[in-house]
Amino acid sequence: MTTTTQRTASGSSGEGPRTENQGFYTRQLPKYFPAALLAICAVVVSAVFALLGAFHPVPVAVVAALLYLVAITVSSAVIENSRRAKDRLVTGIVYCCFAIAVVPLVSLLSTVVVYGLERFNLYFLSVSMNGVIPSMDAGGVYHAIVGTLVITGLATLISVPIGLMTAIYVVEYGRGRLKQAITFFVDVMTGIPSIVAGLFVVALWMMVFGPGQTNGLAGAVALSVLMIPVVVRSSEEMLRLVPNELREASYALGVPKWLTIVKVVLPTAVAGLTTGIILALARVIGETAPLILTAGMASTRIQANPLDGDMMTLPVFIYQQVGNLGLSAEAGAYAEERAWAAALTLILVVMLLFLTARLVSRFFSPNSRG
Amino acid sequence: MAKRIDVSDLNVYYGDFKAVEDVTMTIEPRSVTAFIGSSGCGKSTFLRTLNRMHEVTPGARVQGKVMLDNLDVYDPSVDPVAVRREIGMVFQRANPFPTMSIYDNVIAGAKLNNQRMSKRRADEIVERSLRDANLWEEVKDRLHKPGAGLSGGQQQRLCIARATAVEPAVLLMDEPCSALDPISTLAIEDLIAKLKENYTIVIVTHNMQQAARVSDRTAFFNLAGTGQPGRLIEMGDTNKIFTKPDQKETENYITGRFG
Ligand SMILES: Nc1ncnc2c1ncn2[C@@H]1O[C@H](COP(=O)(O)OP(=O)(O)OP(=O)(O)O)[C@@H](O)[C@H]1O
Ligand SMILES: [Mg+2]
Image (cartoon, rainbow over all chains, first blue to last red):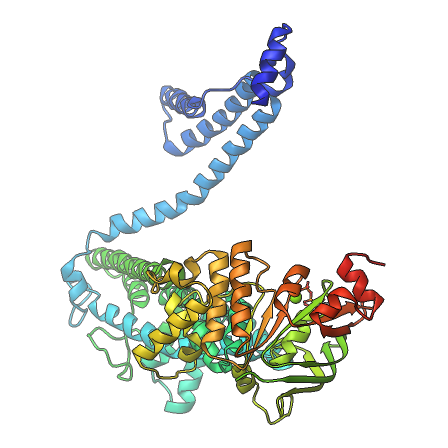
């Protein structure tokens, strides 16, 4: 309303709103301009490189990106204004950084998928290495999948109760020195190198069961040492996110503290807690060094008993196959294929875990129900 | 059953900081007592000492005596959980349990305490409490939807229903209407008038008209200065406090003159 009256008023006095508000207007590059400019840069640079007979995607991409940054800054400075030019330059740089960050990730995934698919099939997933000698075109990872599931499953069974209860103690009950000490030791434990956790369990098993005892349980205990601090940390964060008002609402109804924790705090935080636990699990599922020390490398058969000697897992399987590369040309080729296919299997298992985490947290999140 | 509260020589601390000093008062059963006073003078703090919610805050402690009829609330052998079952509380900010439906929120007191009750009895309690809180008509078709999906005012009435569902002897309300529109506020004031037949009600409010409308007795708290503890300046019949208070301070506060 005010603008129209103002506009007619200033129009009648012979002065358009454009001249009156001149400082507010600026010429603008069209929306498609950056994309078009980037395409032009790419074409020009590839053509130049091709003419010089030195076409290679990496230098072309780098030079084209640099050329684009210069061109967009200059054209924006000329057509628009210097503030816009800076904005466009920084936008360009941010996109470049993003691309640089994504390249290794995509490259890694695609390499694993491409190489892995050569041997990744139902047969590979459903047989073990029992009786397979390195030069045979046979064998699979079933035993390693079973081992990984048993060992990480046991590790989760050990770590989740301990980790969760520690977090509950620290957040809900802890006061003073004991709480500080626990927080400190959890921090320290987060930084323990995984091989040291493995050595610790080797020493423990040596004391309890005598020398040379490797089995799945030892592997699970070693992984728990790594997993517990991660579970404590993430659960602590999640419990702290539960508003104090909910605890007070529950106390005010005459509900004791422990019931408040069990029936109000934990259900409110359950989505975050599960996500945290699954992330911790995903972190230890690829551990190799502690498992070589504790669960051994000798197992080739399918076994699900964590107390019955060596137990193979996916990461150790990969390590072992890579160790076979130098055997003979034939055996080396099969070993390499097996290693990649096992790597693909491991990535798929981890992705499945993440997917479950998302589903679980969506299912439990308070707002989406009902 | 409504109960009387007798407070004598109560000092309330947060760590070394004395927030409330030397309060002695009697809160009559089957009546509404309003607490008024400037911000930060310790009304909420004092209110929370009545049902031992104060000690939930780390470092907080209390000196003095609070009697609920002839039970010494701060006797070392008294279980604070039992005290809170007798003295319910409605908070300044609505805090329904986000993981529970509207229905479950109302019977949360029984549910969280693992009390068994028949479906019929639970239905009865839910309907009665929601009707009392003037919320029944609005939510009766979506009782099993999440409580967090209600508007702010509806959530606050849900919290009131939750507090009355356990039938406490005393109901403490800390600015229950500060986030509500005038219509919900009136609904809650009606509810308070109805509840006072059976309960002892204490309400903290910044709204003088509200204090004058709903309360039978009024207590005025004030600070001697910044960093000083809050004190009870004067307490008496609401009529008297609002027309001819004994203390100059009270008169200044009520008429809006300060300093
Ligand atoms: N958790 C706490 N820890 C330390 N000091 C606190 C805490 N809560 C309140 N206080 C202090 O106690 C004093 C009284 O606070 P209280 O919340 O009781 O005021 P109030 O009268 O309810 O104010 P309002 O009307 O703004 O709600 C204030 O000085 C406040 O800073
Ligand atoms: Mg307050």
